[in-house]
Image (cartoon, rainbow, N blue to C red; front, side, top):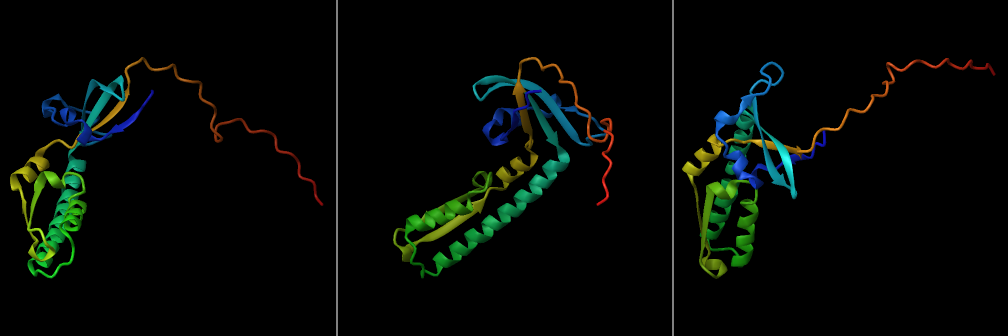
Length: 179
């Protein structure tokens, strides 16, 4: 089959932004809620066949997980804001910026949270941050598609299967000698 693997949706926004009408139900009985479409794209310097999948169930779980990540980021940013507001920090501005960057590190958080760090000396530093509700709503409704790729060349002929241990003919067992 020449299966290559999964592609990060964040690296292929053109695939994530595909209209839902292009997706087709895969198999309602075996994979409830799974929809997919097929396309081609140059990936890893080779034209490949892509199967882009979307599952409402997975999307809902990812959205709930992102809500947890977002709440955690806001809690940590609030702690920094409060600490800086007391004017008792000794951290240099670059260190506080690095701390903020770490908090905003998880995927997609920077698309939803914006921060402003004001002041120069540690005693003057103040942090404000906002969550863009519209950007969060856009993330909730956007397709959380995942793409799998394989080369576009024709599939290889299947190799003959070896019998499994349970279906292989049994060899006669050797008699055990009594000691």
